[in-house]
Amino acid sequence: MKKFLFLLIAAVILFAGCSASVSDEASYEAQVDADFAKVLEKINTDEAFDAMLAFDKKYGTNIVEEFGIDMYQSRSGSKGSGNYPALTDLPFVTDGAVYLSGGADDLVGTVVDWASPHTHAGGYYHAAVLDLDDLSDPNNEDAPCMQTAISSGAGYESRTDWRSKVNVCVLNPNFTVNQAKLNQAQAQTDVICNLEDQAYGFFENMVNVLSYVRKSDMYWWYCTKVVWKMYDYYGINVDSNSPLVDFTQCGAYKLVKAYYTARHPFSSKKRNAAINAYLAECQDELVVAEEILFSPYLTKVWETIRE
Ligand SMILES: [Ca+2]
Ligand SMILES: [Ca+2]
Image (cartoon, rainbow, N blue to C red; front, side):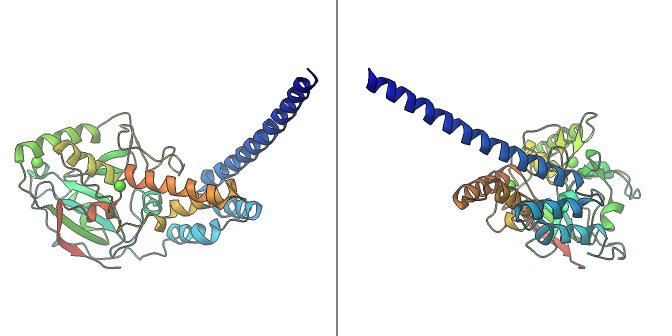
């Protein structure tokens, strides 16, 4: 009986000890989450720098150095002049051709820019897909013929919009296209481009890098996901998930790394496991412009790189 009591007391003490440390850890992680949320809230505002500095100071991370300086430069427009002549020779001839752009900041803002790895020439991060049927009036350069995403969500751009981009390449389908099937897929994509209830984003709530938009999600849209979806309707997956695309080169990764460094300060094993799991899911769930660039179903037929 004595022995049993002793074991019981020991068990109670052990349990109390465990739950105390579990709740300590939980409250520490909750604090990190709250502080990280403050950083995300301020991104794309003038207070971003101060928020990142405060986080770095508290947790010994390097957000300002690894991400903040880039973001500041891209906000102040020092990445490119944007004053280039219109690309008058950019071709619009192949139904279903995919267009990628990069270089200077685009209409859709910096989020898609810093969410994309820019590891290859052109720095491509924006995309659209041409529907020739919307070009019935060849003289109307402003016709909405490019299915993409704009600041309100899935939508359209025109030939005029694309002629003013800095770096552009055109990728044609390299397989025998079934025209009826393509038209059907484009019509299904039109439904998405005209959705009343939708939003633009790579991440839900714009900048929550921990909650990226899933391919299956029908509310959040970004440009490359619209292009991917059109070909998904057609029956082809243009997200190559190519190992040539290095997700550790994107701004979002740098934020995530800092977040997990703060969250698991004493265990590099836990930290690396969390970061690697995030990267693997990102590669699979997101479709970025460079992944489309390396699609085996598409071949580059035209390109101009001006910066
Ligand atoms: Ca068509
Ligand atoms: Ca992918």
